[in-house]
Structures are given as structure tokens and as C-alpha cells.
Image 1 (cartoon, rainbow, N blue to C red):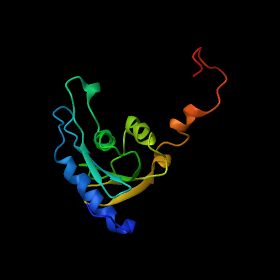
Image 2: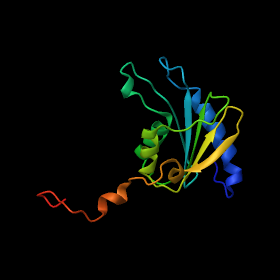
Image 3: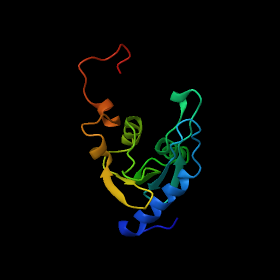
Length: 150
């Protein structure tokens, strides 16, 4: 993935990569394929797909899969994520858990919600999860602390 100067240069390829990632989805239960492509600030892209499990709550969403791949490679700062599904009449939107997971890495990066035809809607993490709780909140002054001072 080459580095791009203008967002207009990388949005469509990022959406295309999210659509490609969707092809690898393991979703035998819901039959609902989702793909994600995560863009780091240095231009590296990490893709992910949803991975379901017979114990339903142990499944992984595409967004969290892509972020986990990036974090395990040493990345912590992201520019954008594109999300794709097979929904024809509406843009795919991340679940609440994925919104909070993305929020861990900032609230001002872009989220591109797409349709199979390549059309998209741009939002930010802050748009998707307003008045959110993040790592900086853990550093704020508190009324009560535990015995060990935390």
C-alpha cells in the first residue's frame, strides 16, 4: 500500500480493501459478512473480517480483528477505517462494542461506512460514540482511590 498525500487518493482503495476482506469472513451462523480495512498514519493497511464462533459471544467483528492485527504489529495510531458488508440499501455501521474498541485509539479519526457498490458515508469515532469514555478518563482526578493509591 503506497502512501497517499490527499484523502481523495486513498478512500476508494481503502473501501475496496474492506470489500475484499469481507470475502474471508467466517460466518456460518449469521451468514452476515463484514470486512474492514484499517489505515495507519504511515500508510500501512490492516484488514480484518468477522469470525464467528458456535459460542456466539466469542465471535470477533471485522473492525476488532483489523485493530488487533495492527496493535500486535506495534501500531497504535490510525487515520481511518473502512467497513464493508453485503447490505444493499444501507451503509454498514459498527456495533457498540466496536465503537468503544475503536475509541480506545482516539475519537477524531475517520470511519467510512460503505455499501457493496462502493458508495460511502464518512463519520468520525466521535460522531459514532458521542460523550465517550477513553483512556484519558482514567487519568482524571477521582473522589475515591483504592488502598494502593490507584
